[in-house]
Image (cartoon, helix red, strand yellow):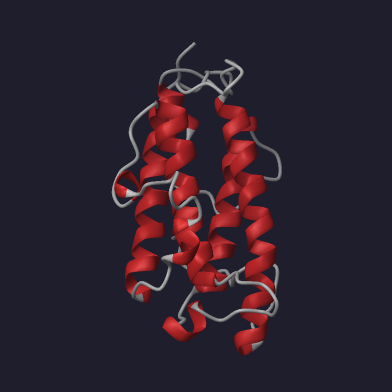
Length: 191
């Protein structure tokens, strides 16, 4: 069963609808997490993006780079079976499995751009996948045991990944300048 991708994936939801389709609810949940994460990282310089809470090595810059990788890993490689784009394609993951965390000392503008580009690619790839089927459509890349996760499962995994990291980002950001809150202001731009 195929659907019109423009009907399946609205341009960008700010949150899940109060009463809507399963697709809109899952995508709205993911978009709310992305937007909240962007707000937690917004406007910081290299010092802010490199701030840590002892004893953790976690930084907002590391989270930006990690979530950019996660976006590409799930919505490019796993969902569509397409090779990872730069910079991920040049990393020796066996030799340096945590590279994205340790290499996040890039310029802030580059880290923000890397994440935003990955999110844009993910939105496009999700539209493509949904144009070829519904939430039950299997991903191109199978798990090690041979099972292929559905688009639904990939969306849920991403919501979970973001929710965990938004909580971490919330604590780090509060330690930097006191910014707290569950949702960004209504006029905060969509990343």
